[in-house]
Every structure is written in C-alpha cells, then in structure tokens.
Image 1 (cartoon, rainbow, N blue to C red):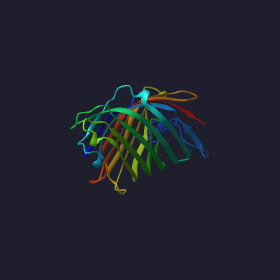
Image 2: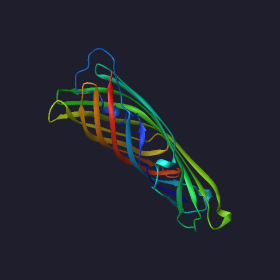
Image 3: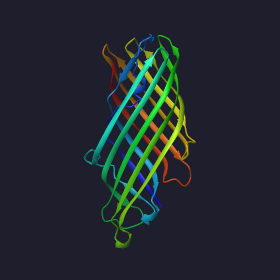
Image 4: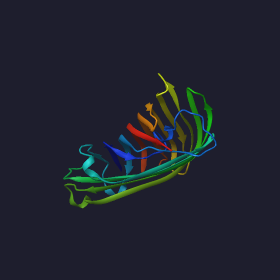
Length: 257
C-alpha cells in the first residue's frame, strides 16, 4: 500500500550550504585567511513523494496543499561555510515539520483523515576551487548527505475497523560529488550562482541529486540571491519512501565575514 504525498510548502526558512549558501562567496580570489558566509533564506518548495504504509489497509491518500503555513509546527535550520585559499568546508542541518494536513483516502470513504510530515537533512562536503577568474568561480566538491523523513497518517474512514494511526520512516546517508560556482554577468555586481551534486548507493538509495540556479546581486555587505532549488531521491525497492522530489524558488541574503 502506498501513501502518496503531494505537499506544497509555501515557505521554508533556514540556512543551507547546498544551494544559496554554497554560492554566497563573492567573486574574488581567496587569500590565506579564513572566510565565512551565512545566508538566511526562504524556500518555496513543493513536495511529491510516495510512502508505503502497509498496515493502513489503504492503497493511498492525497494530502491537501492548502493553508500550509498554519500547519508548520517546527523548523530549525543552520549551516556554516568556511574557506581558506582554494579549500572549503560546508556543513548544514535543516528540519521542518508540518502537522495535521488534510489527507483524502484514495480507496475508502474518508471522514477527515490527516497526515503529519517531518523532514530532516544533514550535509557536509569538502570543496576545492578549480577556477577563480574574474568572470567565473568553479569549485568541485565531495561529501555526504543524510536525510530522514517520517510521515504519519491518521486514518478516519467510514469502516471503523480501518481507523488508526500509521507511521513510516526512512533514514539514509549517501555519498555525493558535484560542483558549484558563480558566473559574473552585466557588471561586477550581478552574477549567476549554480550548484549540482549527484550521489546514491548509500544503503537505501538508488540515486539522489540536487541542483540550484539563479541570479544574484553583490553589495559591500553581502549578496541578495533569487533562484530555483530542486532535490530528488530514488529509493531502492522495498523502502517506504519512493521517488521523492522537492522543488521551488528561494530568496536569500548572504553575509560575509
């Protein structure tokens, strides 16, 4: 049996190295001093995934995308980026929980079922700057990404014997490789940040990838960046989570020190 989750998250506040955070360093050559960057930002993702909940005796359910903000019951996100010459270290923790979302059973007469979805990810990577020209910076990266997702379905069906609470969790850690950077456009203030990684085979995952592209403007105190972020997971057969995709716009403000 599968729980089909279609969830539009109108806002995700946080700090993340993988995307806006990873691209927030200004276009300049590093010297032999540590440089740090943090970027608080809003993410507007949609989530589409499948979750197997065999004990629920249903073939699936749809979760309504309406009024998501009123169901945001927890969020905690932070990250750090440090660079010394061409080398860099990235680290990230992100958590969000959406409670009591409306869920419509696919194969039963539904009387008000609900679902709670929590997402937690931790990432880390080492980067090396391969190109540091005036118009282009390009880094390669090697790291790991861990993600844990828990979905709890509260079934309220016409057949009382089917009612109850059913939960499933997936936790997987995967190696990733990729690149990130930014390309200057128009003048020395405007630029295009970009990021891509690919991984998998960490135990539960066939493939995972993450991508970001956008446009930004540099100021003396930092950057303002608008872009689009996507994260995909294809889990191995038999795992509760299947083919999860998160995608949406980001707006961030980066501070350098």
